Length: 450
Ligand code: SF4
Ligand code: SF4
Image 1 (cartoon, helix red, strand yellow):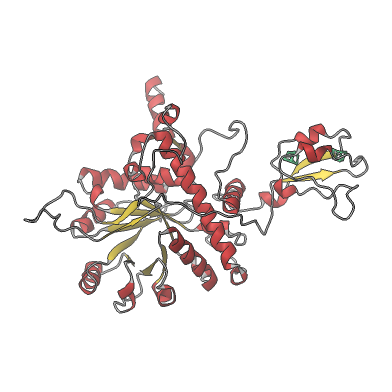
Image 2 (cartoon, helix red, strand yellow):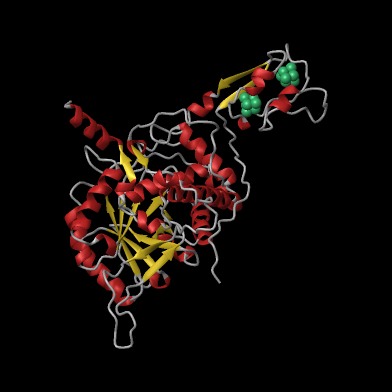
């Protein structure tokens, strides 16, 4: 029987509890009337348990900054301030607002709602310079993301046939090995500095529960081989064919003698899928075309943690992907291969935008570390402090990432529904469904002769 894909969410409250605002009650003015309890929809104000005549300290973490209590307090006893701790979070890429959004998503698994109207900028750098074309959002037949019309977020890993060929028994011939995953998201290994067993177990556990995969170092495969994991052989490690005999997919860093290694893998396990991991740089297109023609099936193109190419003057991941996509479309190869893209994917909207620029699947890394509230970090210099991962509660950590994925999937469904698309597979390389600020600006300037 047909079963809709469902992600089980559950509350997994924050342990750090750093909110954007600090709510202050001036005890010299407060008369403990309790009007602020009624004014606040988010339970910030409560009475003390030990003495209900007196108001408790406001639970600032829950405050959304609507100012209603401040306005309604008859004594003018309440004030709202920015929380300096909040503005110290993250770095120039993972800004505090992004971190807070991930924390909210990881806490309850819901789509974040920020109130009436959007108060931010309408364009910005990187992903903020891409707008999704939601022109179908007004169609009256739409009945919500969980309505009658099922929207599929499933994607395939592996090579696809360019056309069907049948044998004498009318069976399709030469179907390559292929794996379907229900969401277009994989988990990258955590940075080496955080090479922690608990963290690996949490990510492997999440991948298995969601039906997708976590990429891990091949050295750790033995311990995690019962989970949905993809062992990765870095460029300086030798293939261990015996080790990966239970694996369905392996990842191999681009290296000398790559094709020989691929042949060895395929000879020893004919159904195994091999993903070739390549750092994003300029001029990759002919290499990808060449490898595709020689039988490569999956490419993992990775940028740095901020989504930049590994270049002196890097392009952003979406620009690199568009360039690769244009090239392989010209040679009619795009439909045959899977492209995993990772680096800088830190918000739900980054998933459809990356896919529309040419990825089939995205890989996430920093986003799940943020969901787990793992220390301060600076992705610009890629330095991670030694942190308290070992003490992390496995169930809590697993649920936080599952919640995050549910929220991102629901937002992906919203975007697809608003675009009038019934499956995410169709979004791959659909740049026509996106509006690129730089392109629009150029067109305008050309029009007015600037
Ligand atoms: S509404 Fe103002 S005066 Fe009344 S309890 Fe709240 S802070 Fe105190
Ligand atoms: S500002 Fe709004 S959300 Fe914050 S405590 Fe007051 S009523 Fe609640």
